[in-house]
Amino acid sequence: MEKDEGKIVWVRISDIDKNPFRKYSVYAIQRDKVDKLKESIHKTGFWKTVTGRYSPDPTKAGRVEIAFGHHRIAAALEVYKPEDTIPIIIETLSDDEMRERMIRENKAEYGCLPAAIDDAVKAARDFLDGNREEAEKLLKADRSDVKRVRVGAPAIAKYTGFPKSTVESSLRRLEWTETGKVDREALYLMPNTAAANRFARAVMQHPASQPHQRTIAAYIVKNSGFGTASIELAFREFVPLGPVTDPLCPRFYEKKLAEATRLINKCATSLTALGRLSMPRMFPEQATKEDISALAIEKYHEALDELSATVEMVGRVLDREPRKAFLSEPEVSI
Image (cartoon, rainbow, N blue to C red):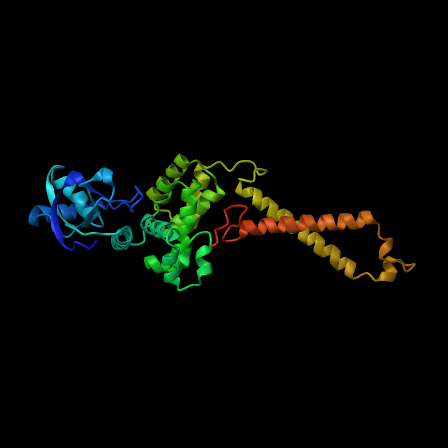
């Protein structure tokens, strides 16, 4: 079907739907921008700048999905009646084109807001997951790459125009919200991606119900405390630390770290002392390794295993990117 470029159709406001790929209801329609657009509509009318398409859903025949211009439609809803008509530029737009225009609008209107970035990344991820040839084309990769489990940051970065590091951060946030580990509404109260990532990491360390997370997020916003220390203090204010024996308590890992440190010091001291002894002094009658009891050897290996396990566990906790024990490993990516 050829595109019907630039055809202006007068559409009832009540028959206009948002871009179907604009998924998150937590998007903040910017009040100041709506007010400015309302003032503009009152002075010069509704500009013929909003583009859309007829809904491809047969149950919504005659309805129009806008590709962009959500703030302008929000302003029109406050100026006109639902049965009033406004001009929409109707084009024959594919789902891919609707996604691309939504992504461009989000980048222009919302900048670095986490919800805007994540919405764009999710739309790109879902599209590329079902179109591996498109992902391969973006990366100019071997066909073997498109057989992997899920399209990852490199292809999504090419598709959206976001830096690869931004996409990687967004995919982690999507994993947290889609699995219910982090409340989406609470996360997107954060003003930028850095604050959102800090908030999510705090949730990992201080598990709280989703309503509780929203309460904490509102407190953080009210106090404008978006730094690591401020967010940590907010969680400590609202979330009981629990007993030190509880693995969900941050002090549990501090205790384990202290235990590991003592074990390391003890092991180092013992090995140093052992290294200073000569074989004749230890075994004056020229005893051999076989003279050491099997029980002693077994206890020695048990001690090493205990030390190794403790150090490994503490290392995972202290890692800036928590491993599988605390967050799911990311899926293999293109």
